[in-house]
Image (cartoon, rainbow, N blue to C red):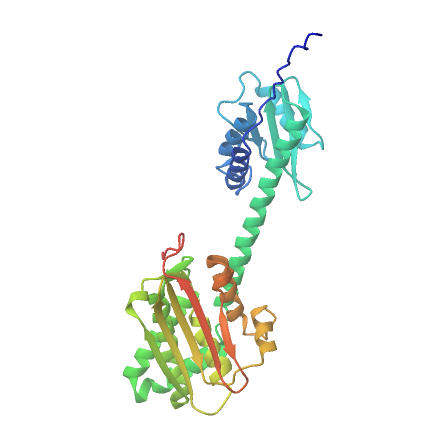
Length: 355
């Protein structure tokens, strides 16, 4: 019998753990949220160095300052400076001895340079630079989103109706002589209202603070509208400590009065309720005013409503962003039958803490 060929043991080089790679990529994205000049650049360099088996990694910003993973390679100061300078002016990787510099671009703009010291493959250079550039772009997108959210909140604060402010101050002025004590109380209410609506706040507050702001606003509106406005506010004590995004209730109440009660001559009622339902807090704002067409409501929630209706869309977006798509506003309305807006939020949500 012919002899059997000797068996051959095939050895495969084991690559990095995919889960570890994904975790590192996520960590690098967080580290570089503030860019290459931020405090997380050193951490990002260390994470990338570990992925490459301990290769010394440096991340340089546009000023030429380099954040190294650990101590920078000794005796290479002049070479590092040369490679950083040349890489920042080039379009492709630059290799000088054992040092490689890769220009990093984000949205066609130069963001910095990646330095690798030691023997590295072209594939490692390409993948590493792409990972860093993706992390930098992610950071810019998050920063842009934060700026947009801040701008939207500023718009919401600036949406205080000049008509309401004028009427409130006019009523207060008319009471200065005839009823100075009531005028003083209303002026204090007005001061509290503007303080809460316009002053700087943290991202979250408590429902107790939100209901306090609502009651202040309603006190001023009752002074302006007189007998035309009736108000009912009922809130269960167990939900007062629930943390919610700042300024989510007052815009709903303001919308009920401005678009439901004010346009008509009859007496109107606004009811505000808050209660615990299982693990959720349910708040409703209901008026028996004008109501609206479903198409008009859809346009408002999509941010295409008339001027002065940004409040509903703003609140809906922020609720969905914080709690998920299931926790947006639920609005029930019909022309001539009033409007009911319902807000559901978890009584306890990780990361949502009143400040």
